[in-house]
Amino acid sequence: MSLKRWWRARAAALDESVWQEVLPTLPLACCYPPPDALRLRGVAEGLLAAKKFVGARGFVLDAHMRHTIALQAAVPVLNLGLEWYADWSTVIVYPDAFETRHEHVDEAGVVHAVEQVQSGEAWLGGPVVLAWPDVLEYGVVIHEFAHKLDMLNGVANGMPPLHEGMSRRAWTRAFSRAYGDFCDRLDAGEPVAFDEYAGEAPDEFFAVASEVFFIEPEVLVEAYPRVYTQLVAFYRQDPQALLRGR
Image (cartoon, rainbow, N blue to C red; front, side, top):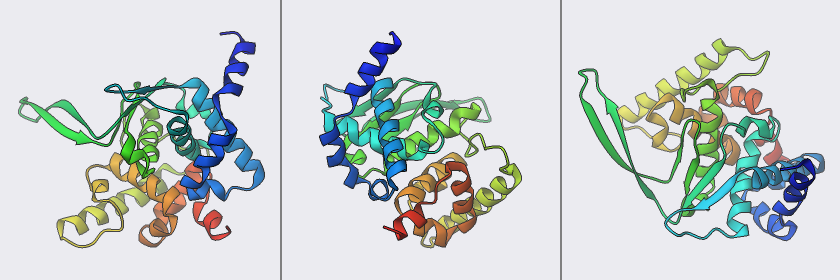
């Protein structure tokens, strides 16, 4: 595609009236100052132009659905850049939760097939897969796109590529202690600050923490302030400050 045609497609990708309809579905998006709000629009516009949005099982995606997903996916990379999503091309959307089947080999060399019902999934080098009803809750989009950022190091392990000046030691200490505390609370049957799924693995803890960071930042600040501080440095945003100032 020529540069001229690419810009024409980019300009046509975002419908201003639909964009204004979906903005209130993510409270944080309404809190950005005008320069950041304009950049957010540009990132979402770029996503709509660069990615294929495909409905599964005959599901038909309309402009409102595509714009909703693009808005929520744009927020995490607002201050990182769209290139952080550059190594894959497709967003697949199911009309409801979907089943997945994965195989893993245990320490004895036995292959196990695990079937799960999912609301979202991110594949290394492949698509992001979403269930539309959970998109409406908006956490699943941030969750799966956070996995994509995590995978940029080649594996999902809760350690995305850190920026220059960030300390791997500080990141590891903050997340390891928080994840350990979270799992200890789950094992003891005690209340936890957010979705229990965060206790599945370090990469899930990072993805769920990212959801909470952008949606209910005060919850993360209260539960795990050091994790919040690390995410402020990584995402280069402070959602709590933005939401307080609205």
